[in-house]
Image (cartoon, rainbow, N blue to C red; front, side, top):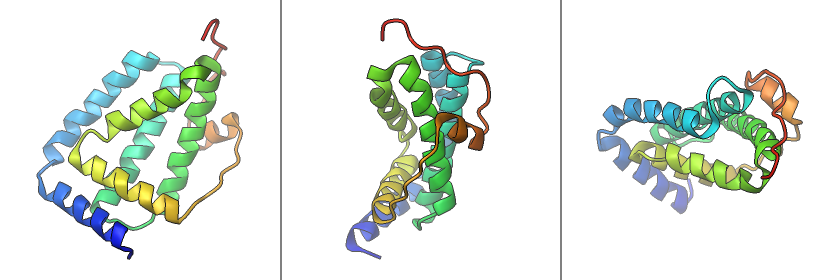
Amino acid sequence: MTKTLRRIAVAAGLAMAGSVSAQVGADNEDIGHYIARVYGRGNDVSAAATAYAGALMRLWDTMARNPRYDQNLTVVADEAQLCLQGKLDRLAPQRRDALIYEMKRKLAGTPQRFAGFLVAEQLSEQNPIRIALSEREACGLVGVAGPPTAPADNE
């Protein structure tokens, strides 16, 4: 284990020791309200955002508990991100990266998830994966169906 990864693992352990489990349930509810506020309800973009949020929360919570690279969780998170990016490319192309960043910031709002985020980022840098999928393929893999997002008028 590298020195940097050891430091991140210690941060993850400290976050877990900080009794954050009570915050996680409230945070999940907040994420649902956040997605509804930003992306609406019952459309393909909100479904993609929900799939991405769920994949990141599973990945980061797992990394906070056990700071070891998990290719399966990482690939699912990457596929969900590709799906959401594809939807946002047509809905709000100029804001796509900012919306992705804002969601990550919101999701990493507890000490546990922030520690998991740090571990996952470090491990992803050490274990790069390249995934080449179309929006339709990526969305199909994460269970997001529905008609394509209509292009935005003036984004």
